[in-house]
Length: 171
Image 1 (cartoon, rainbow, N blue to C red):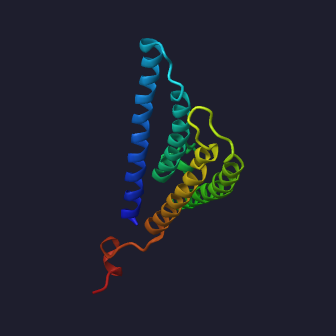
Image 2: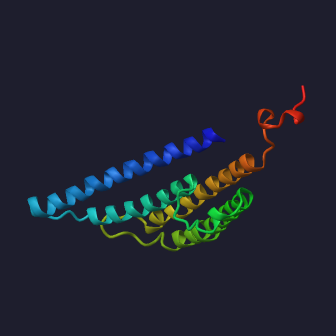
Image 3: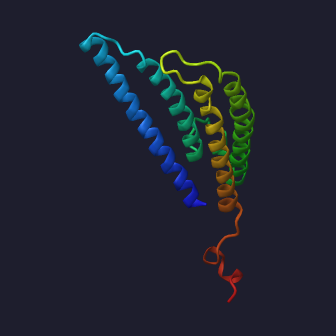
């Protein structure tokens, strides 16, 4: 399970890093072409906007997988570890439901509706840009399932023999 998680993490880190580097380069080119060359580039604004959509959606999946999303933990920090574990499992289930209904189903609907709409500067079907929603939804579901398995495995697994009291250990 850990190798799968590390694989997804590395893939998302690489893709998001490349997207961010591309956005920096395109943004620099936009400024240079506008103020130095005097002929503004026509494709840079759309490219930046579409890259930001993909970067934010993939970043959302990455952060959900790392369980580093924004959350209010004031009440959860004061409860027992068992209640905290169940709360975290419930939260992961909410992530899965949100991903299925909003990101995957809604994303596929908006993608299919807007596939005939073409972006003016790049000439890309807008449905392809909106594919960021179902892709990130699928990644969030995969990460949430892995998080639930990890929570249940670490919290509710029987303790190993070395952690058991001496009277409970057997040869």
